[in-house]
Image 1 (spheres, rainbow, N blue to C red):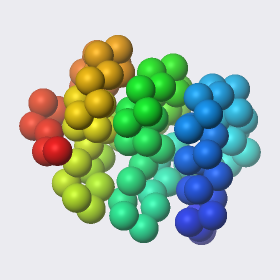
Image 2: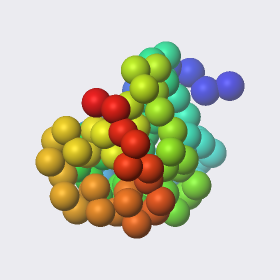
Image 3: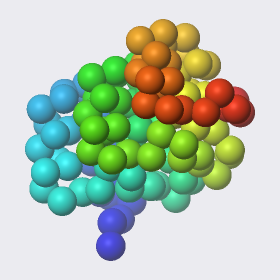
Image 4: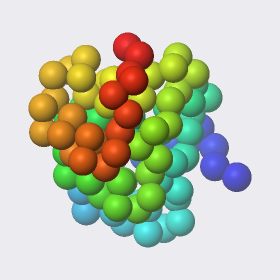
Length: 102
């Protein structure tokens, strides 16, 4: 079962924007939809950081574009709050709902 430590490792990799390291982390068996104790997913983190290549990687690995965290916010909501236009477009292209909550 995934732990908060595993999620924190994922978070650090996403923060750096290193697509290759994120790809290798997923290949090691970590699910693209792992959640932390607040319901955040790696997709939400990548969208919040504006790392569109990582967003695309996570989506291609099966990340749920409709997932919401414990606060009711989705990856699209975080991308919109940050004004990350390329990330917003990638999420919309993947079918993200426009019904977002900040």
